[in-house]
Image (cartoon, rainbow, N blue to C red):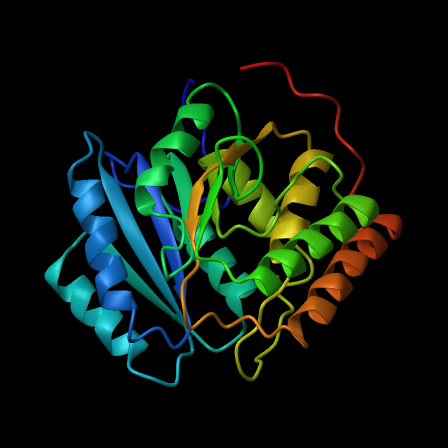
Length: 274
């Protein structure tokens, strides 16, 4: 795939920008973050391309920020961004827009999808897709150690997402998605729900920001590939089985309402094949 020119407002990259940027949003992840950073960096150092890692601390109340700063001080390929606590959606957006790589991945801090699965997503971006999303469903996807209630929650939610907004995808909520630089700058600047107007929050927030980004991607005619990946359930998940499904459903409904009100603009003509 030919490199795309950087859109207006994109971050200024070095003369030799990274091929890949990995973004990790982190909220109270002091227990897991050092090991996750080590594993990501060990993997990236083995690759034949230049890379960078951006950790976005989402206003953690534990030692997450200090540990991230310590890692960055020891490795110039790591950057840390300190956000007030505004939730995962805003943290992901901050890191994605700051990334200078040709391709930009965001990954959950627990690495429930192993970083080595990045190769699967990059292979599709290199074939001309603009967005490649990890999926825990479909042939080739494997879930390990997932409690039955979590799997049921995920399937029910995705059926609602398919009915209300995105019937094309089997799994919108896997926290492992990669974008071209062009798609990143366009889509993450256009999000409405967890964009510039988002405010400071309390506690962990599991949201439907992924749904809005994917909805925008289809509306703006980006080529999106759903890629089956391996996924490991991580203990200490911040998902609240009572509160979070309601917030997720509310976010999906807000996406549809924003579209009805014209806040996402008109659907673009189909893009030419790469």
